[in-house]
Length: 154
Image 1 (cartoon, rainbow, N blue to C red):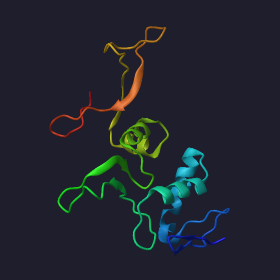
Image 2: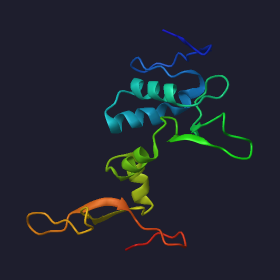
Image 3: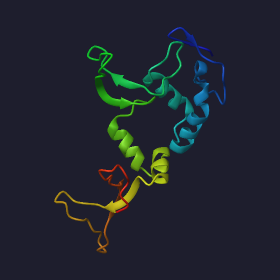
């Protein structure tokens, strides 16, 4: 069942039919944890990463993948085609959404660091939204950062 991708043989690492190419087996545990959190099979997660991530020579996934514009970038200045970043090439909005979505790894880490807070939901007019009982409706949001760079606790 070994295949080829850019001339790189796939590592014969199996777990219920799950194969990870080359040295990328170092991400095995993270892929399994992501699968357990998301209910997406690990094969699909590995396939998305393999399709989206930039690769080092030899086919190893590059965890710091970004979407650079190679024609416009220079040694001194990097120009990006989009905000896509990471091995799955999430856009900025996706990173933000996943950070505020309870149950995700990003939410867990942001909460541990005090970056996520319940704040009153505002309507388009900037007014606080209340439910039918007259209670303020909260939403998950980022805590404000003061100009000092410290997290505001209010």
